[in-house]
Length: 75
Image (cartoon, rainbow, N blue to C red):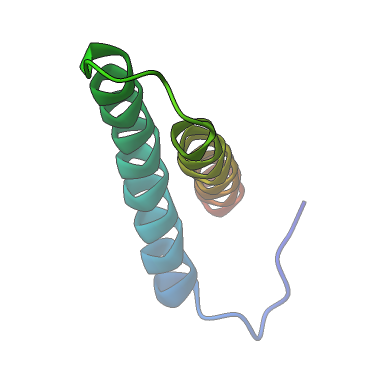
């Protein structure tokens, strides 16, 4: 799929890398929250579950979008 000519490719590349980094950090943060939630002495609270869904879901979405944009720019 060709991008319109009026899109600055360097800006789009920067946005793609930002989304890749943000998505990766979101997934890593979700993993850390999961580890902390299960290693605490108290019970696993619903707040941890919500945080995991937000971090992993948002991180996965951003990572997928960044990789898709990067692939479009390379073609």
